[in-house]
Length: 190
Ligand SMILES: C[S@@+](CC[C@H](N)C(=O)[O-])C[C@H]1O[C@@H](n2cnc3c(N)ncnc32)[C@H](O)[C@@H]1O
Image 1: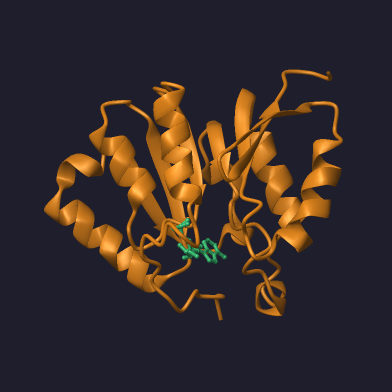
Image 2: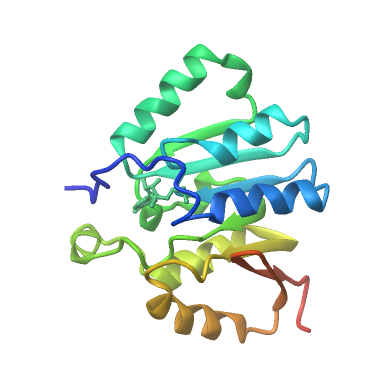
């Protein structure tokens, strides 16, 4: 059985400000015309809705493992069809991500890396956290941004994976922004 996430996550900024800080960053840096892959839509769909509403022409491909969150996405775009051009949300497991089904990406948000993966994902041959990170790094365009959320409850597990990944010559630390840390994929080595 697929490792379904049995909850619907509201916009709980005190606990989990990562999505808000992502959209603050996009607004502050005037980021436009980018393709964003977003791990964990939430039931609020803030990232997708905000980009569809703000005229940035940023396109968001979200993934959720929650049937309730996916159903709220379906209802959202039925009620507000103008959203669907800029925001698509897929139901699935990020650890089953398929490079052939992904566009080239400019921003990847792995705020929830290491939070949800268990033996249940192993049972159907899902990628590991590092394999998923590597695959999404491959899909980043040169200059593209990989973002993490050290406020995650799983950061203790994620940090060594991210640090080892960041040692690669084509990855550069960019900055900390509010609750996020941001790396860039370089064209070649440093
Ligand atoms: C705690 S919620 C956070 C939602 C949103 N990013 C926020 O910060 O408000 C975790 C999100 O991760 C998603 N999720 C959990 N396991 C997943 C998986 N294996 N693949 C894709 N998404 C998953 C859930 O469906 C949910 O949207």
